[in-house]
Length: 204
Image 1 (tube, rainbow, N blue to C red):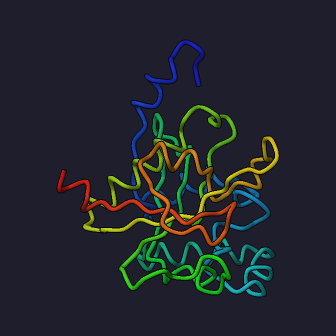
Image 2 (cartoon, rainbow, N blue to C red):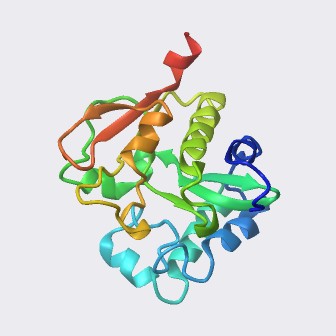
């Protein structure tokens, strides 16, 4: 990013769009050869641990994500800047992320139709600039446009100083608060469940 542009100007130029076949190449560029982190390709929450671990070899997880996109299933939202994908939020119906229901601390708290954000990823050149907050706002706006009422997530509250980026793939708690999310469950002290009710926004 050019040093001549302010953070405010930069953030105002971000746009957001769902991952589809037409922007798949931009998703590939954002995730790079490592698939964001350790050949995950954002399949960690969608697969069993054994299948995910196996998929880290021979592009298995990458191919699994591409299959979702080709089948036009919801996968996530890209944050775009000057035609380049610089940010990503996994976003789909909660039931698509089977690991959540196997989680001891993030089980369903009610029967509401919920879409989840289990993972965020920001290009390293654009971190610590406020992108994650704008990305979350972009996901919420997209959810509202699609008629999705409840957006749920599981952010991290650091307990010791600053955590390495690879340890906060769910996003930081403060980012969600700034984007308007509210805590709905504290079964996990360091990983609370937060939600954004888009219908409440419509009624304001």
